[in-house]
Length: 67
Image 1 (tube, helix red, strand yellow):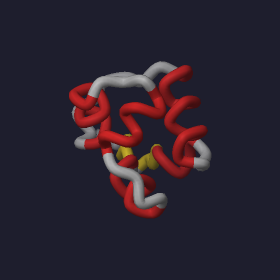
Image 2 (tube, helix red, strand yellow; image 1 turned 60 degrees about the vertical axis):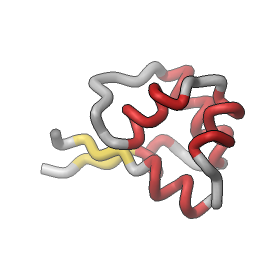
Image 3 (cartoon, rainbow, N blue to C red; image 1 turned 90 degrees about the vertical axis):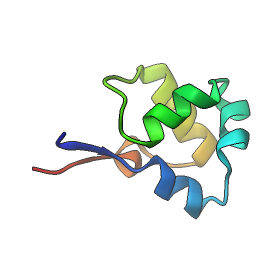
Image 4 (cartoon, rainbow, N blue to C red; image 1 turned 90 degrees about the horizontal axis):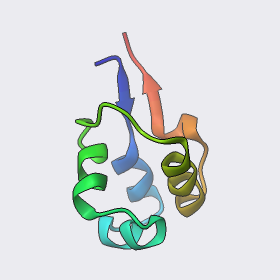
């Protein structure tokens, strides 16, 4: 898949655990894990916004296009 999700990288930079992020963005651990491992087929803009707010980053920090 050409879209790579760098959620684990941003979480490491912010020293935030999956549990902590889950509480901040009000998502289940399983849904965040699916996103983190790159198995997600889609993401809602509201979810992306909440993650960016919690990690103090931009969508481009989380999503990357690779051919």
